[in-house]
Image 1 (tube, rainbow, N blue to C red):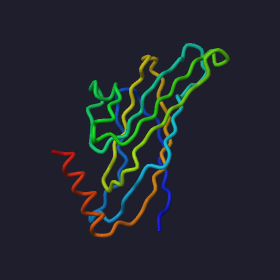
Image 2: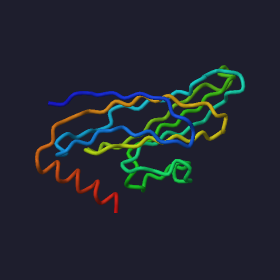
Image 3: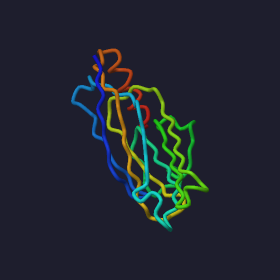
Image 4: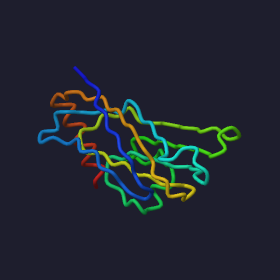
Length: 151
């Protein structure tokens, strides 16, 4: 039987948050169900914002150019959230795009944020994961995928 677990936080540009999910035996798996983001100060004068949040299977260098671009061929990328907000919301409405993989994982995940416009406004995120028990075969597959990503 599965259940939904949620995580939320606020992240500065060019930094990384860790969502600790690992267990000693890897018998619990997760799938992303929802990702939502919104900047800290939406609609504030001078706070036009475009920000990219990415969810990774492995730790990233938060200052790397990898977190500044979207590359769905990167097998360590689990999902992205892109937020665009403008202080003139009547002319340029806020937009949000969320795309994520349906993959099951059983290790920690990493959230990075890149502020495209460099307005230095942190981004809030809300993440829902479906938690499920893994049998020995599913556990082995998920763990081997994680090991392969570290190589």
